[in-house]
Image 1 (spheres, helix red, strand yellow):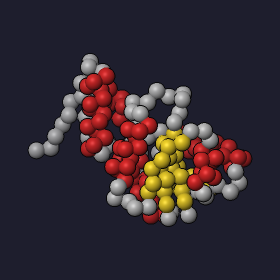
Image 2 (image 1 turned 180 degrees about the vertical axis):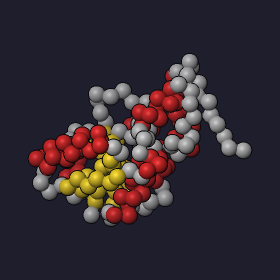
Image 3 (image 1 turned 90 degrees about the horizontal axis):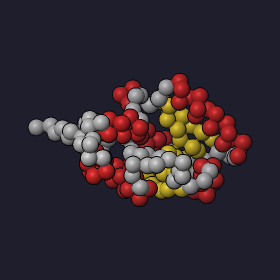
Length: 171
């Protein structure tokens, strides 16, 4: 069974990775699908995000990484997927995700939405939290993979010289 895990992943976090790893145990294939959203101004390009995710998921042979635009349900149908995988951090996520799941069901009765509760240690974590911390110079080393943290620090150092992040290293 193929599952699509859609999102912007700007950037991918350890919470996303935890969900993908758990999903990879449940489904024969998990497609991490980066949405090209014209309504958002991302920190990273789609190609940068795809590369970050590929590097983060290279240890899982049943995870594919792709990008799409338009309706998630249409993309899932094109990929032959039966499931949309979604993570839930809090009650507020559930309300939004349930509405989206019901809407998607009106578009395709063949595609189910499966919710996985976020692991406790990542229940607060989102890409926007990571960007906000880095923007104001905080360390994100404990929130994203090392190669993603490096990309974030480089991006803010180049594009936002006022917000030079403090990079911490364990000695």
